[in-house]
Amino acid sequence: MAAQKFNTTSLARGLVSILLFLVLWEIGSRSKHWLGADIFGPLREALGAMGFKKTYIPWIGAVPAPTEVLRAWVDVIGDAGYWHSWYMSSFRVAAGFVAAMLIGIPFGLMLAVNRTAFGIGFPVFEVLRPIPPLAWVPASIIFWPTQEMSIAFVTFLGAFYTIVINVVGGARSIDGRYFQAAQSMGSSRWDIFRRIILPGTLPSIVVGSAVGMGITWEVVVAAEMISGGGSQIGGTSGGGLGFFIWNSYVGGSYEQIVVGMISIGIAGFISSELLRSLGKYVTPWLRLR
Amino acid sequence: MAAGMQAARPAASRGAIRIEDVVKVYDPDGAAVMAVDHCSLDIEPGEICMIVGPSGCGKTTLLNAIAGFHSITSGSITLDGEVLCSERKPKAEPGSDRIVVFQNGALFPWKTNLENVAFGPTMLGKLSKSEVTEKALGMMADAGLSGVEHNFPGEVSSGVRRRVEIVRALMNDPKVLLLDEPYRALDSLTKSVMHEALLEIYYKNKVTIFFITHDLEEAIFLGHKVAIMTTRPCKPKKVLTVDIPHPRDYSVLTSKRFRELMEETSDAVHEEALKAFRAGEKEG
Image (cartoon, rainbow over all chains, first blue to last red; front, side):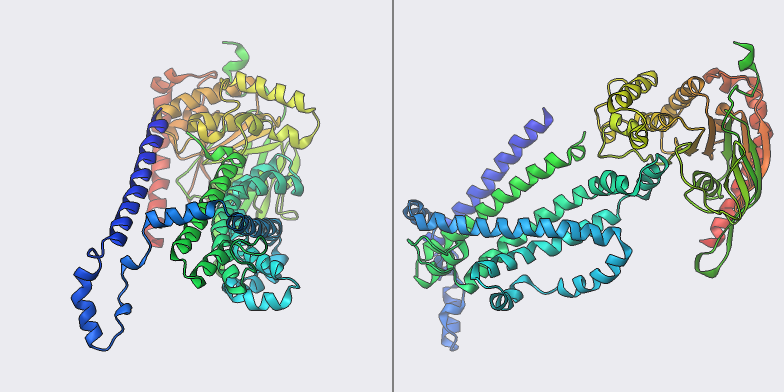
């Protein structure tokens, strides 16, 4: 009952938050007087007189208003190319993310369980980890035969490090008494791995995946922009939401830029929610009391 | 009560622990610290032996040596005549004949209470899955744990968790239960309930109990034998036989004999607590 009430309240607050944001944005964008010419006008003029370009002063009036964005959205909503961008980005995120899970979780567990593996594997890992995934873009374009593979690889890197670090940390922070208890009760090494280490690490895997998923979206969009997604709006090949944004920018359609940005926001939100519910499902003991 | 119950010695044929001249020296960063100093103690089969001493006196070191979690430096510990550890084999093999109930509890949080209780027999694999479940449900019902079988440990009170853990230990049919201040974190009301619950479980399953505590009242109330330990290095300072007949209940606490025994021993305990406190001050 209490939880139900809390949910309604927080939902209402969330709606108010989004509405307030949209309204302020609309006013700011529409009114050329608010946060615009009138307040900063003299300052702009003064700076202009000093030889600076007037455009150096950011101005919310330059951003399309939400209503204009909505109109642009309605225009592309029937466009197959727009949905293909969704599909391409989601596909790349899913591919990179699943690969990161499939490789990262066993690798992390191996580092956590085996001292030798840790000693040999971890230093290299730690040197490679600080390299931002985007710094890998040129090298991976050279290395991978297709552009698709290079984007997927960079996306994979985005999630991989976070997942591994979380798995190692999670497995190592399992209470030593669990091992002692299991050992006393006759568990073999395999039993301990399967029944203690694996479930004990699961919460950290869930956390690592959620964070990794966020990074994956950041990376895929940037990788698409840099590598050039391949097709134009209206086309059905290549693309991706990152390229959609870049293409809109190049084409001077500022409303579409914002459409692309919000689309990514929505896509990221949906994937986080999916992961969160999946995470709750696999760690039932954590939703307690 | 039955005549057999009158004596301080319960009827049990197994679970005799003999601690002989055990020494444990820790050597962290080259500075040898003696945790246990030529400690000898005999525990009879089926006896509740309470080990009393201030926090950090080295009691747990002794328990870890019996359980097989840590090694000893010299001396020997035997269980029913079988050597667990000695100078030649300093670390005992952990086994299901000696189960530890940990200070803050070590139920697996990702398993339900029933799965926790069923863990030991499942590992040993001697019984079928349905037999294990049946036995687990029966033992839980016996211990008043009906209704929480399918809850996770995190969903029940700490008192219930502690009982589940004791049942989990008993499911392995151990010779010895090793309890490391199991009720330390509980409030005194819950504690008193837990004491009676423990005795009730004990009367049904006669095992030797090696029970570490710093609470003298708890020790005299539960134990057949109370060993008051000196603080670091740890060895018995005074071993007291509690001649209050079992089964006991809470009326014992207000009895004359209980008060006499408390008076007899509290000086010794207080003295060691003071020593531990001063040593702690020096280190700090």
